[in-house]
Image (cartoon, rainbow, N blue to C red):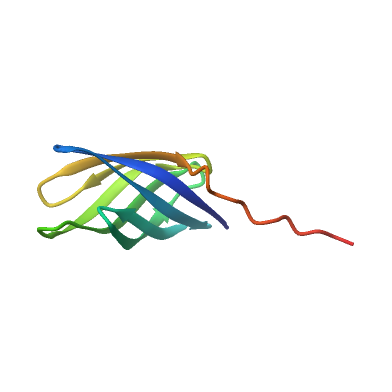
Length: 109
């Protein structure tokens, strides 16, 4: 199991939107929180050993809620996803946040 915080950019028709994704990978399952457009919304899905993944969630805008399915790749250093909503498609890319601090390693006596 591993966890990462990514700084992300979502490309939209009206310009880039910035946010973060907190991602937890446990074997073939991936989940976490997508924080974008001033909202923090959970997502979940599946992931292969090579990082290829499929996730589902929602984007919440001022005007509406957009359910999405996304495909792409998540690694321990970066992510790239294509989110497909009912009428729109958004590209999301990111890298591990500078503020991410990994958990201390277990010490043996």
